[in-house]
Image (cartoon, rainbow, N blue to C red; front, side, top):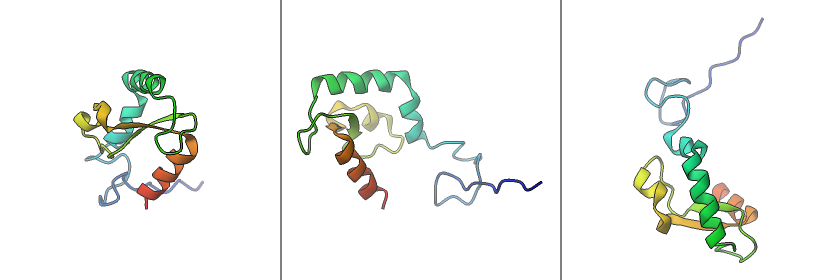
Length: 98
């Protein structure tokens, strides 16, 4: 029976495979979004900022203006957050992943 190929580490510069002994199973900056505290902060932020910061349509996502990459101070700073609609969030994510 064929086995699945090992997946590379989340950090593209790392030579290990998952689970990586250095970076674990998932990058720290992605683990934030699994936390209940983040979901509460995001909902409260969207309640206060119901319109997209770019196009003024109804916002659906709380986005980090500057990617935090695991930096807790930057991840939780409200001045680093913006409300975005689904289309603007997808565009920003697509551009930043390039």
